[in-house]
Length: 422
Image (cartoon, rainbow, N blue to C red; front, top):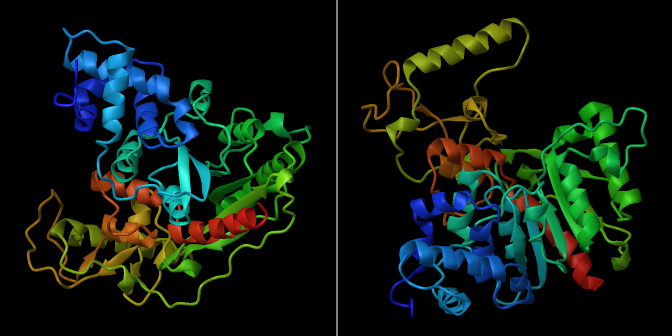
């Protein structure tokens, strides 16, 4: 049986088919998409069997009365390789290095390293909405929970750089030396476990600025001890990097940790110097009028003003903030405060008729929230990056993302050292 006229890549997005696959223990959808994007290199071997299983499942689902065997599935799989959807951010045709993307979110690390000529050979992300955004832009569905051995078993050998923006968690190190075993039960342990088993030439970790002082410095101390002493990597002192120093108008500080395998013989590293171009919110502001749904009601504005006044009387600086066009945005973060501290003036609104259920009339001062596209630009995502989720999810995704230009500038220094010393 030939499926060239009966089966297409679009069939894999069928919701009923996806629901059917949820019951499967193996992450065959991720394996399938990873296989399609790695068929030209040896990495595809790690995904082929489950990719074939995925194709078989689709054929059986679509054509329940047709016989299906490995030969038929193989034929369909090979055909689908050449029918891949056109995606905004394809991998480079001649990659300079390979990397994996853990806690991938919507692909900030991937975008940065692909811009430097890197090929992503494995991705992991558990959030279902982030997976949708990742797949729409890179053509691959990330694997799921990286704490599971069944997920780790998909990770190929021989990649050069491990990237991870792992969450900050406390360790139980009372009375202990603060080593590898003390990090069990945390997501850093899974990162360290993968580094230990796969021994990449380098790693690039990102976390919130507060990691430096978390648990009175014990958390960072344990992380560095594991990376340096237990795993043997050269790890320079971590650096606090601000996104505003690398071409985006956002005051966003994050801690970067890089390391090099002893086999590279790399024993010195310098983080990138800030760029010197002037940037402001007006550089990322929407070019034309935006929907009234982003404008605040008078009732909401009064609530924000009262809240700020109460805190001001107590000597606190909490409350909303309006960013001037020539100003720098505060860090975009999840939750209402991330949007309320990044309000803007925009007097281009011509239709004040509400399109959502709001209390009170739309304000006539031109005060609105930033749009998801503006948040994307604040994080360094180009405009061709597809936003395929609701505004609520989009704010969450960009708020959780890394700032691409800062990641790319640092990754460039890592790659330069690796290739120079290769």
